[in-house]
Length: 59
Image 1 (cartoon, rainbow, N blue to C red):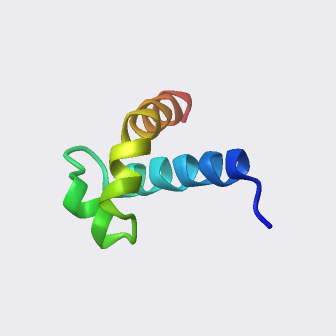
Image 2: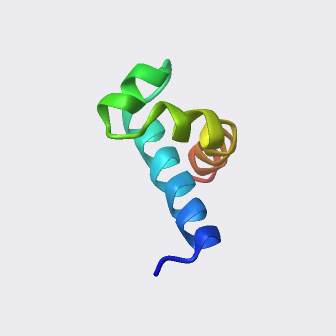
Image 3: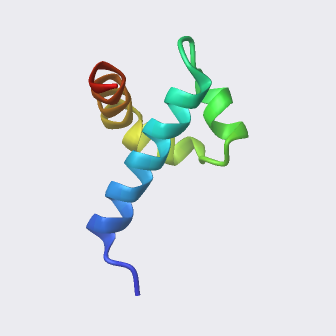
């Protein structure tokens, strides 16, 4: 059984990586095409955006 906190963290990291691969101007629709549900985007989008920004600055 997956631990919910780990699953959440993994989803945020995966979404942030998807955002980085799409690049500037990434939309919800782009993330849906990458396999994320609208609910996941609503729940985790802000955190994933912050992480993607931090990852880009660190690169």
